[in-house]
Amino acid sequence: MIQLIRGFKDILPNEIELWKHIEQTAMMLFESFGFRQIRIPVLEKAELFQRSIGEHTDIVEKEMYTFPTSKGELITLRPEATASVVRSYIQQRLYAKDPIQKLYTIGPMFRKERPQKGRYRQFYQINAEAFGVSSPYMDAQLIFMLTVFFQRLSITGLKVHLNSLGCPACRPAFKRALSEMLMERSDALCSECIRRRGTNPLRVLDCKVPGCQEVVKNAPAITDYLCEDCARHFDEVKASLGRMDIPYEVSPRLVRGLDYYTRTAFEIQTDELGAQNAVAGGGRYDNLVEALGGPSQPAIGFAIGLDRLVDLALTKTRVPELPPDIFIAAMGEAARQKAFEWSCELGREGVKTEVDFSSRSLKALMKRANRLGAGHVLIVGDQELDQGTAILRNMRTKAQAQIEISGILSGIKGQLRAASDRQPYEDGQTNTPKPKT
Ligand code: ATP
Ligand code: MG
Image 1 (cartoon, rainbow, N blue to C red):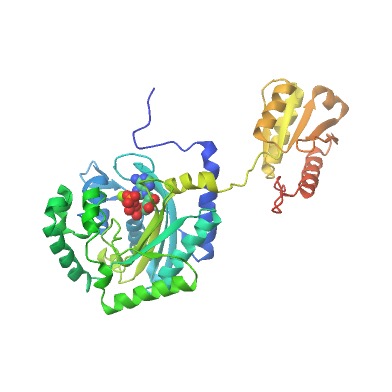
Image 2 (tube, rainbow, N blue to C red):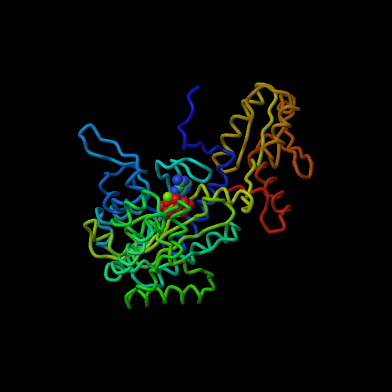
């Protein structure tokens, strides 16, 4: 048997309801904050990621799936979405009509990392990017929106870690100080950090090797090096979060794994997923649009790791169940033919219908209806057909009603509606969604 590739996975139908629920929650919420969906390709020119994420980052140095085309051009399976959204903002001139564009996208990303729990080679992200606004209110609003998103999924116990990475005016001084400090600690750094401390010392702060993390504890704090503008911006982000009662922790060693960030950087962490503790991360990238050949426009965005979020949501989030409204149990060929026609018509009208076209016994059919959690079962055999009636059984109350075969569709819809009106859940939702009429 051919197996799937290591680090890749199937997401099966019994898991999908939760994925859909999470995605729909994000879409609805983000749209209320003025975000619109964008879909970008999974393949882009390698250069796009090299230039945006940065040459000396884990992603570009070793995690990208890059292939040559037949013409020898290097293309890459996207390791993240921001670069592509920025490319699209520039290439499609989205800024021309209105430089303020708030966009979100959902889809798979690819990184050649060592597979382990919470870390896959194809994983999924929900991304949101806001272009054209430099105000710290935007930063705070994005983080606010994220916390509401997690609340809606009943996911608690998350912590917002916040930092400012400064700007090209103030960061060089910090980099120098950090680099000097790292030079003195060569003995304790991993070989990769020794190599990088000169080219990209910020990456050392992000290294997950325990020895390096120990060294980093005594590193200078970037927040001590911010220029006046960056410091004021950071203060405003913090004050605005405070105004909306969003708890956060300033983490001066938080740098994130991508080079394009400026000013605000943040990560949302949980202590319930072991080593893979980051559920979402983001930050401002005020210079990236221009660096990639677009107009000078500020921007900020974040990515939520869907796979890790689903792991958390498994035990916390209640997904509304949508069992079939009706299961048609037909016995005999004539009845099955009717069942075929009725199920087509009911499905067309949005009544969630399940039907079994096999010639099984009533007992077997009822067992299947039960397993599916069907609200009602329509029982019809050749004998019922002759009499011009069928039996509609309410699977919760066990009440049975005779229903005329002439006009059966409106009869079924009437019964379903009546049953759903009578059986509200405590939270006011009905267990059988009302069929559209
Ligand atoms: P980590 O530090 O865990 O490697 P990251 O900083 O590389 O995460 P980002 O590039 O910021 O992650 O992506 C945002 C989110 O995407 C992360 O917070 C995480 O939830 C998720 N994510 C990143 N890489 C993977 C992966 N290989 N498998 C599953 N989820 C991932
Ligand atoms: Mg990573």
